[in-house]
Image (cartoon, rainbow, N blue to C red; front, top):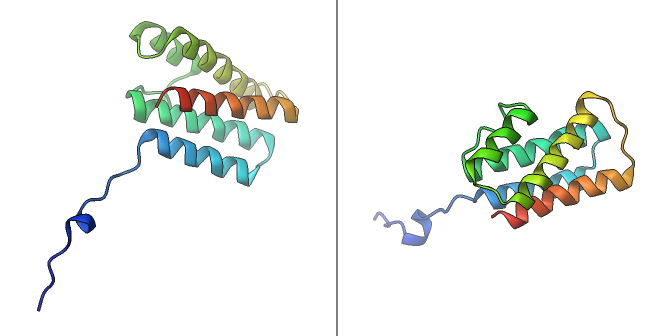
Length: 121
């Protein structure tokens, strides 16, 4: 005798961009990688979130290209554009200019990423 699948078993709701980003941020915090890796992954989480949430091609663009696009499309508030701009520029300084942030800077960057995600679900 064959059992019919239940409706609950058939319905699987995929996680939202918001949920994916928060989980990725939590994993990053728990793993606590070296500074350069931390900032690269932190930036990647936010860029992927932006792509999934707002359909912006964030991962494939430079920070300048991406910020220019967000300034023209009206998807983000002025406050969120400013927060995002500061955050991405700081990440770029660490990734490309070899800036060596301290633990306070690192925490501030993490908090900025989390704030951005939480305020734009």
